[in-house]
Amino acid sequence: MKDLLTTRREALAALAGVGALAAAGPALAQGVAPPDATVPANVLGVHLGFTKLVVADLEKCAAFYRAVFGLLETGRVDAAIAGRKLSEVLFAPTAPGGATFVLLAFHDAPKPAGGEVILGAITGDIDAFLARAVSAGGSLVEAAHELTELKIKVGFVADVEGHLIEVVQQLA
Image 1 (tube, rainbow, N blue to C red):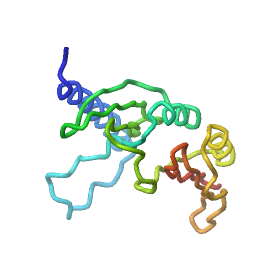
Image 2: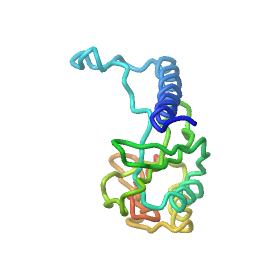
Image 3: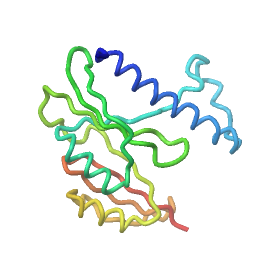
């Protein structure tokens, strides 16, 4: 039986590999400007490959994110960080070069505090997204409204545990 540290290392290596390869190709193909020369050379090429949201009820939250975002579960990990046992649900990126989304529940912790992170979602139909979130057990925090100077429509919902999700739709 694999030890928890080995399993965790394998999971993180898989996350990093997927993100690094997927992110490099599109950026190069689109002619993205080189990084700011003031950035130290040792951090060039570093990118955010995944986001982990700490939750209390892993199954309830996984069902919410599958229903609202249409996420595809790619795996589960039981591991530990500094001796604290945890379980994770990993989801595939929703777009080429996108980051992996992970739900994480510590076995020894109560419900985490709300407001520790705001997830961002980009959609072509903000009203349908907000309705889907409410239908899946979330709550409307702020109805969609236009920010004409930014040419976007934005709204906020909370997931089943109160984590904020900012939803943006590009306007024509």
